[in-house]
Length: 258
Image (cartoon, rainbow, N blue to C red; front, side):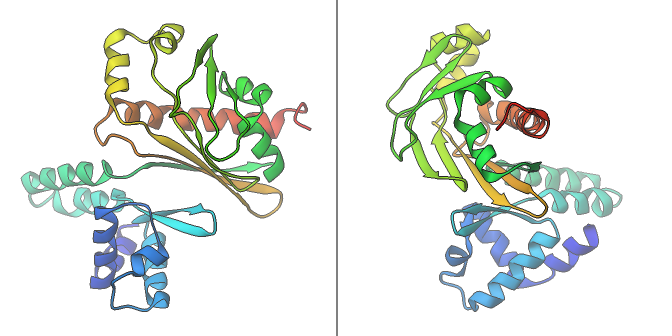
């Protein structure tokens, strides 16, 4: 991986694209091409090289692909090559890695042996969301519609809890719930923690569904608009992998999903 990253970073145009993603993460090909003295085809080829090297991650947003900076390979280069020569400077690079990663929305991708229709149902239907998440949603799922979250008997309502995107079997996006005292009490969250969460800006989650081969669906979860050093980011980075794993197990093993 480090050889691929070295080769990718050797090109000034590719470094420029990474700089642009560092400034604003999650851009489409069209957005990245804007103002550059490069053809769309050239930018697309550079992005393919960066993705292959693991320097960017890609998720689909409708008909467009969004590109996200991933500083992991840069850190690997620092650990392997620079630490042995100058540990002090390497520590500075590690701090840079942390700073870069703090600007990246949380992105998690998995492949589930199911159909887009069943996965779509499992993301919305209260019977299924309660089975793997312990949460139910009350919404008509139209764009802009309000959502009521119910978890462990505590119902959370707020005008800002709403559906952002609803493209059946392809893409679902909505704002995250409000951290109310009732939610905190039901989930055993102490007052100080709830206050910290409530002070952070409201985030949003997006589910992208993309059919793959042999009856498999690629699911990409993007939890964005997070406070860079916020508590919620730490919590969801631990929670989403477990939650998606439970969703995958339910869809692949339960005969109840029809």
